[in-house]
Length: 169
Image (cartoon, rainbow, N blue to C red; front, side):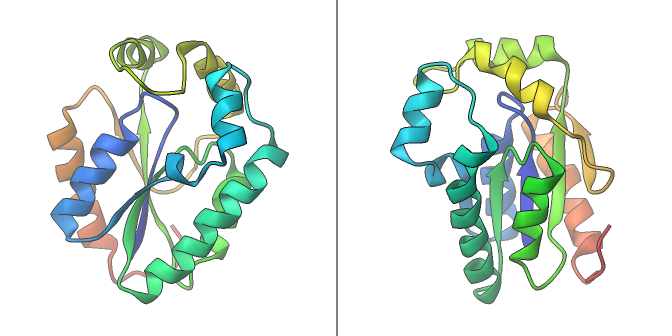
């Protein structure tokens, strides 16, 4: 099973994804770790990435998905802002990717971003992510006002229900 926990910056993808992977006894991967040094520096300087910038990043995660599926699955935390990005990730998998979509208000996202330190994604970049974000019509959509523990509980329940389903949502 491949599960992608997605949402814009500040939505809690990494926190929820890491805890969900632990609950499911699956390895956890963070899409941030697949960015090139050039992309990270660009974002650190406050410059939004283009689709071209994201090409190699998506290809690296897609290759990972192909391998992770062979070894029993994984949980990936990834913004996956656009449908065409999600299509690249899904195409790498032999079975339907299960999506957990974290969504919340801009105010809550900004508040969370202000509360973290050491992350290259700065608050001013949130507007570009929100402008690019295409909310999927599939997957489990969760409101990030809930606690991480509650989000993980709901996601684990959903994944348990979906686990045997090979068809797209």
